[in-house]
Image 1 (cartoon, protein in one colour):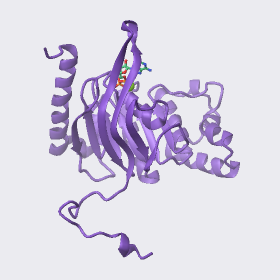
Image 2 (image 1 turned 120 degrees about the horizontal axis):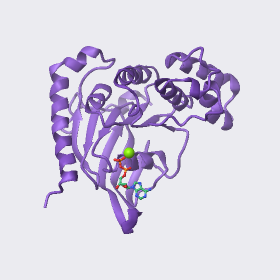
Image 3 (image 1 turned 90 degrees about the horizontal axis):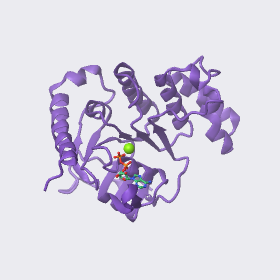
Length: 284
Ligand code: ADP
Ligand code: MG
């Protein structure tokens, strides 16, 4: 069919500069209640009527007070948790189980200590039956991309924290997933290493173009790496503020000192602070 059939002229609803990328992840009116919480035995409403649309190849960051439901939202995309009501769609299809189309990077490197760097990277795809010619070629390219060429035979204990996170990222990318879920991936790293890792995420995005959902506590990190930042309210989590960053990629360090960066960062810090204060002193 001729492509013209698919090209609709801009209307009042779709301005000429509208983002026409398809949705990759959609939360439709999603709520999540955990049956029991702590010693009280009371159910916990972790997320309440969440509506979010994340575009293909978008990098979106999620900020919010501890316990507001960020990991819960991510676990629902991963297929580890299911919504109590509403639907989570992945590329138009409701999520009901984990799959190789979504990879996860956690804060604590979850590498197998008895396997080498290379063995950790290829384990998942090897066990799913990918041919060794393909996964070895991908592993070689990924080791170079995360700057670990030469460390193939090292064991995790021989690596720094940042290097271990780079192995996790290579392992996440080897199945060439459409979606990468990162749950505070750099939370345990020193600030210098974090800056390098943030740049690495952007470089890898340039190369592989996945959709990235990035949870962080760090407002500057959220602004630097993402196309859009969502700030969630205290529990039950909803979107309190969504900001488009509107800064082209690749990004340069100068972005951090630009007036746009400082203005967005202070807006987010202000909103986050009021949420955290409400958590400490709930409004009466
Ligand atoms: P965040 O990642 O924003 O810190 P979480 O999504 O981990 O928040 O948790 C949201 C709320 O749900 C918290 O009150 C937490 O204690 C509760 N919660 C998370 N996972 C479970 C679980 N498996 N069972 C019961 N309660 C949970
Ligand atoms: Mg969490």
